[in-house]
Length: 173
Image 1: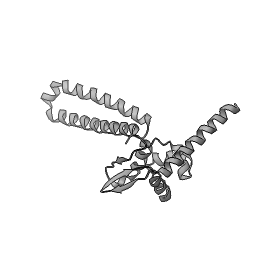
Image 2: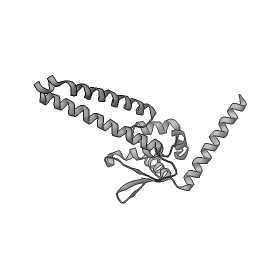
Image 3: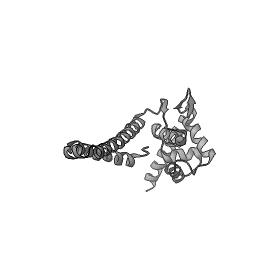
Image 4: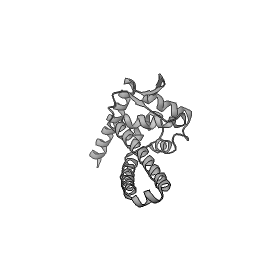
């Protein structure tokens, strides 16, 4: 799963590289004719990896294009990836690590560390607080996220306060 802009750019780069590798494989008629099994295994492996990365790119692009005022359907491959719901919701709702940290009464670095470790180091309370902030619910077997008006207003207040603080800092310098 792509979690940030840096990972997104790296993944896109790998998609391009793998595309070139597939093109080279397709042009290697000698290997395809003389070692068809080896060629097929190599081709299938690179093609499969590229497809997985393309799917991750498409998903990340959908998350960053999402309108935060709308609900979003979040998908995970298994329940082992529950933490991905929180990361996807944060991205889709355009919330920074710092803003989520304020809701969870944590530091920005702690939220980043939670995400880096897929929330395995977060407490149950931290996890459920983030679920509540993002309004993540299981409805008819699908995970839906929708921020309530209460959390939207709190987020707007946080952003307004940050803008005010930045203006104060500039005025003071």
